[in-house]
Image 1 (tube, rainbow, N blue to C red):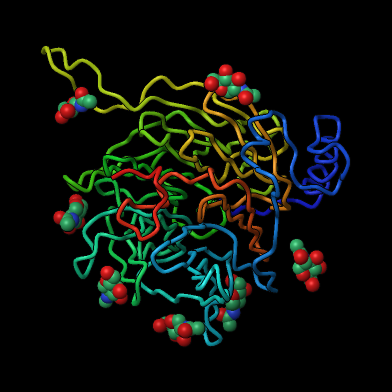
Image 2: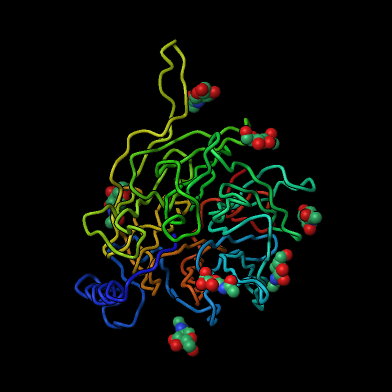
Length: 388
Ligand SMILES: *[C@@H]1O[C@H](CO)[C@@H](O)[C@H](O)[C@H]1NC(C)=O
Ligand SMILES: *[C@@H]1O[C@H](CO)[C@@H](O)[C@H](O)[C@H]1NC(C)=O
Ligand SMILES: *[C@@H]1O[C@H](CO)[C@@H](O)[C@H](O)[C@H]1NC(C)=O
Ligand SMILES: *[C@@H]1O[C@H](CO)[C@@H](O)[C@H](O)[C@H]1NC(C)=O
Ligand SMILES: *[C@@H]1O[C@H](CO)[C@@H](O)[C@H](O)[C@H]1NC(C)=O
Ligand SMILES: *[C@@H]1O[C@H](CO)[C@@H](O)[C@H](O)[C@H]1NC(C)=O
Ligand SMILES: *[C@H]1O[C@@H](CO)[C@H](O)[C@@H](O)[C@@H]1NC(C)=O
């Protein structure tokens, strides 16, 4: 999501975040610590020397969305806020930024890909790539006002020249609103959210579809509506086994810069499962059993969502990252100024990247924390917890 937020909202968020001191604060003393623990489980996650550090702090907002770590090349793909993409052109766009040599001598380059417009978020997946590799990223893109190139779901190669291929760019004859986030289940099916923020920010044509969540199945090249009834479906993630889908509804962010206190800021859990076909067999999978999973204790909502291999759910909100276990208990909070959201991504074991706009943050914690979907079993150095 990318929405302008009023100054008063930011101030409200800032004053609210001061309230955490009332809760159990890690190691009691230092109020400057960005880590707040609500459970011994979070102390285990943090390990003995958790650290929040700055990878980059630039004058442009280059680290706004995305956050896809690519272990084989030690690179991280982020997405900028709207920036001027070339001196001669009077337009601005969200562009892909590749951070190279993440763990040695980080540098970044702006990837000026012209066959995708306003990319916003993605994840790694295994699928058929350009040159025989099965190492790809699924990326959602808002598209632009002329829908050329269109909004939708794309695959992007993590290797130069970063070949871009559309997977689905319309539901039948209807263009998508402004696809915002995607997750790829273990069976290869891709679920993506499609709120109307891009239209409200003047980047997209009139919306022709409800605020929905879609499933794209590469095996059959088909797309269907998977979830409706949400106000602004935004962040999306799944449990490591692919049985639970998490969707953050940021409906309280109306899209015009205001906050509707009565609007949803909730992350919902769903089951992804087969039902009876009515003919003695089973049909599906369908996304069923919507339930309240959690709501951040701030004025934000889960714009960015990820899970780890232990099933914990990590959600970026207005004041930083909230961590819940799979039962919806809040385990901890990492305080980072994110203004109005963005996204997060796990890296190497015990590592999480947080997009803070101008600043790219890195959290280092216990090595047992491993992000879902970050590693393939075939990657050199893949953690033993990642099975084929
Ligand atoms: C980033 O740089 C700006 C300008 O120098 C500074 O004000 C700000 O505190 C820095 N942020 C972080 C997180 O280091
Ligand atoms: C980006 O691509 C456009 C269109 O091909 C080109 O005009 C522009 O110079 C490129 N910008 C950069 C920074 O490479
Ligand atoms: C450049 O874009 C801005 C914002 O959309 C617009 O107000 C302005 O008129 C444009 N300038 C030119 C020379 O096209
Ligand atoms: C093809 O894939 C390999 C990795 O398997 C990569 O090193 C290479 O750059 C890729 N080439 C192209 C053109 O995508
Ligand atoms: C997938 O379906 C879309 C829309 O129906 C079509 O435009 C596209 O060519 C198909 N792709 C493949 C690889 O068959
Ligand atoms: C779910 O149903 C589909 C048929 O729609 C079937 O192919 C698949 O094997 C079923 N999966 C399970 C786990 O029963
Ligand atoms: C969250 O998970 C459930 C189920 O495993 C446990 O029973 C809870 O104790 C746990 N909550 C916390 C705060 O750790």
